[in-house]
Length: 118
Image (cartoon, rainbow, N blue to C red):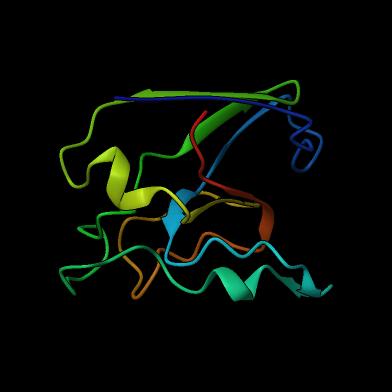
């Protein structure tokens, strides 16, 4: 079971709400790197079974933001908590189209966080 609450999501095209691609990526490295193409050190979607998009273990439903707040609540059986500790999650500027290969054409990587436990 995954619950996500993110604040500070920019409005897209002055719309109060928008969908954004939200994925678990292979590597827990959120180095910005290139300002025009940030967070590439996180690599691709977490995909231990080497399957096509949208069946990657790290493919999650899009997150809906409204007035800068994004909330997601979903269930997945594609990985265990221990399998993703140390990996990263990325929120994208656009929504995942669920078609384009290899990653859904979700746009720029806007934010990155490393998955940890306390």
